[in-house]
Image (cartoon, rainbow, N blue to C red; front, side):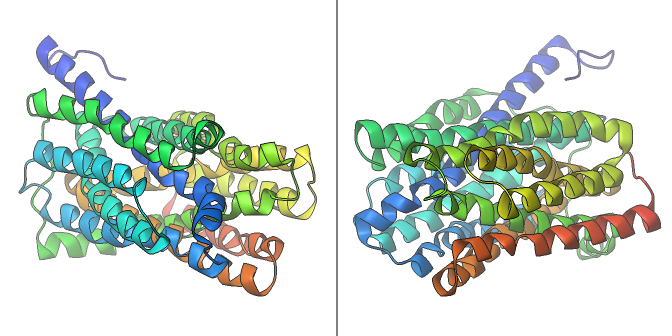
Length: 397
């Protein structure tokens, strides 16, 4: 991270550090809330007798409210107080997560998911734009670190489910995670407003038109839609694929192996973006991910499956922050709308692909559904390859 500069007082530097802690902590907790969903699916099936096609609705339910509110936050950026938005997002997400442990039926569980997603959209729509303005000269690196913290939480989420099942039942994981939002909310409440230079400009119709027509933003949107579609499929159905292919004790752990790879993957991607440029890095990561997926779902068996899953996570993890930083550099004065667009598109990918895979699993097999993930990976290579040739390397500024 950056140190105190000539134009920055020690107090401003301390404020930036505390707000960075808030942003990273919320990202970690939100990552855990998302990844609990995939790990808890077998327990939902057992507790409520839910068929596979309905379980496929878990991912869409978690994104309905998220889509609406993250887009709204992007539209009003520069007009509302970031601190208040973050406070509402943190508190509401924590309450929603805790409520998910209290549900009496699967339909109510889906309703609680909508509530959690709505407040998470408010928080996620505010936190990364704040980080962008706190570190305007190192967006690529800090975006990578931000998503690395999300991955840390996402890795712990499935482990929390496994621990909860050992000592009680799956509901305990939601209770513990919901309470964990309290200290973050307290920090947001007590900290003074963040001090940033040149925050987001209020969005106008002309400004929105410029953002959505930007070639870098279009590349980001297409690339994120494809890559997060793969992520959503893996997050939701990897444990189902692992059943019968791994020892029962390793089924839930398989998702944690995938997410554990996100931590070094995103750290390395954040560092390499300044050396190789965003687009070449995205193309290289996509190529490695496709090769890893081919090995995992066509060749690997036993513990080799976990090796393949780790390699997928290592390469797939860096795509989202790399593509988002690429687009943000093209319109830093509209960081929040670009962030909102990236989150909306990623939500569509994360929600849509698992739902399609659920129907494929019902009609064919989980193996056939996992092999469908090759399609968006090939599409990703086409998008980033064309962007590399037509738009150049696009290194960070």
